[in-house]
Length: 300
Image 1 (cartoon, rainbow, N blue to C red):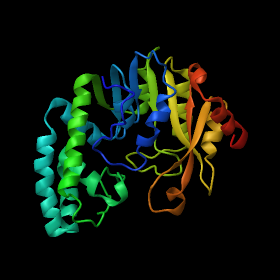
Image 2 (cartoon, rainbow, N blue to C red):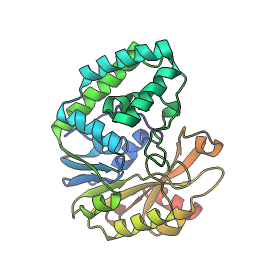
Image 3 (tube, rainbow, N blue to C red):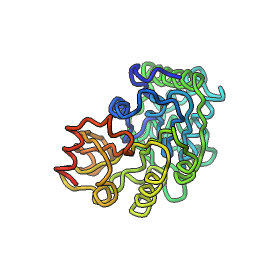
Image 4 (cartoon, one colour):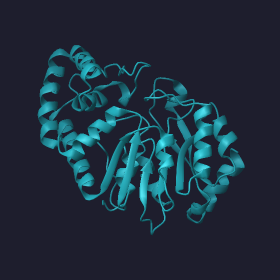
């Protein structure tokens, strides 16, 4: 398994809200002697688990397309060479035909669900968004950069795919398309659950919506699990506060920090966010006291 203290690995999927910058922060909460299974019910790009899982991992999501891509890399069906050939070809067509080719690929993906088309769309869509409509169709508009896939950019993506393949070869990664309830139910004592659901009230159309019912359900599941857990959420922006966080999580240990996301087109989603890691009681000894009390005094 990858050394959890090495520089942060950035996966090939580009997505808003990716937790790359939070990996070192989340790492501080992990027990030094952790040897159980890493579990992610909301895998997304997988950046946290790919960097912090130590022996085995269950990576799950309801979005079948990111699972299909990572499983194809794990199986060797997609590697750096195939990605380079694909992106050189499709990038050339994008330079020639502009947005017409982007929408051709988007229509093709919504029909055939090719993992390589999904990778292309995640890198050529507007503002790094991954968004689907109620019928499951990818509906992110073009980023309006027909020169997107320069030689250097293609090489960066190829290196990320090769890096992903190397990490998957080193460990025991299981990928599943399933609901978070099913995933959390599989956790056992000694496991470590990291939960990063869509942020309620901010960007909930990644693949499924997220609201009060889900927040309450997740709260109950994490309070009952025998595993250790860390839950990422937002607490406030300069415009508003997350009432669900205050209602459901205020009594649990937590640490906070300011973070900035380039998320969506609305003004409040493009400003700084006070983000929290809410965690199980057994991790409290690893919580920096100053940060823990700061949240308690100012927000809850």
